[in-house]
Image 1 (cartoon, rainbow, N blue to C red):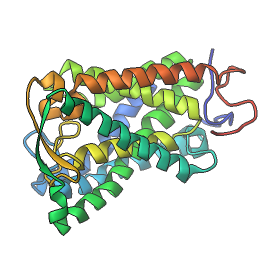
Image 2: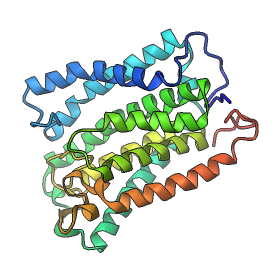
Image 3: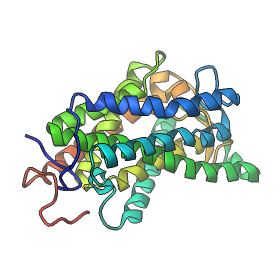
Image 4: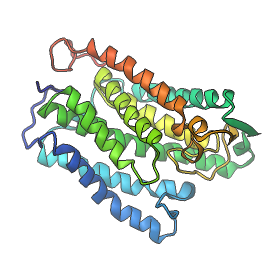
Length: 306
């Protein structure tokens, strides 16, 4: 049975078949990202894997994500002919929801790193070295803005547009699986471990369950921002396999022991602690989301947005 989320506004244009929507999403993502990625490579701001080098590379990478956001916004506006409210940019107290999500993302990243350290996966090398460098603190603050744009666009595309599009044409279960599979595919590389792939898919389920529960994408946009930013700047460890090349804001940690414990070159996201935490969080939100389906639409009876 088809369902709707965020808004019961009917689409006046073409909603692609559910099986085609993930491929359209991937195509829009790749085409939009390609010019920016080529530009970074030309400027020498990527490594041999194509990952951005340093905080400047991270910031300039925003051009690629902005292009993706504009492409998907154009698709929603001119192809599907529906409003941005119908893809999750809706509800009241939007800034509050974002900031609560931001705080939770920071807290959960801190909890994972603490668990790894207490289990012997990290060794403390220095305390808050970033505070010895005003320039580093400036870059760290700028990266918060950069991660806000990057993470918010990813949530807009995958949990806002793709999730709601598939749900309109098929059902909630298909929306969870297909949107999460597309998200995982776009984070895949030949060197990606099975643990990282599993974590990425479970994170996507967690994010879908969050928006299903809250009926907007503001909170999960904040969570994704806080998670990426604190993971990338707080401990001088990689985030999603990417290095910020900045001194740690909180404590410099050095990985010790097995990769499954500390994530090694992938950072804390490659740890079994992250997979376990996101699995528990996903199951909890999925159970809570069931209580919000009294009328089969996913939209609360009263229209209230929590």
